[in-house]
Image (tube, rainbow, N blue to C red; front, side):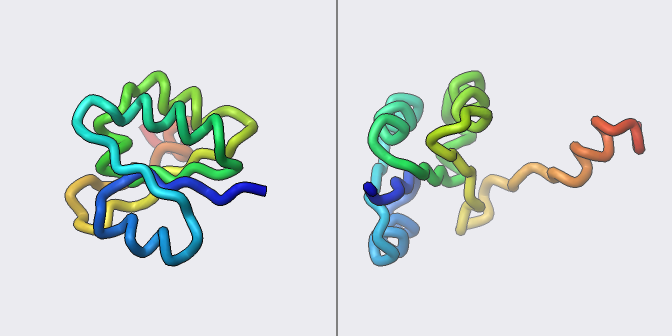
Length: 98
């Protein structure tokens, strides 16, 4: 079994590397290609929210809905990019709020 891949900033990558993950720190415009490369070689791909915000939305959505490998967006440690409010999205989809 291969190690998970973390795609994100250098500071967070250092921590994920200590946890055993392989690291990708894409430059501007390389985010979507980094996601495709990570999906081809890892059972789990972790993407920082900041990098996910710069990725092609369709590619990220397709990766997130695929059965394998699992792709998860993790919070941005600097708090520059907020994670979506999943509870509010679910309530809206269920018709519990406008």
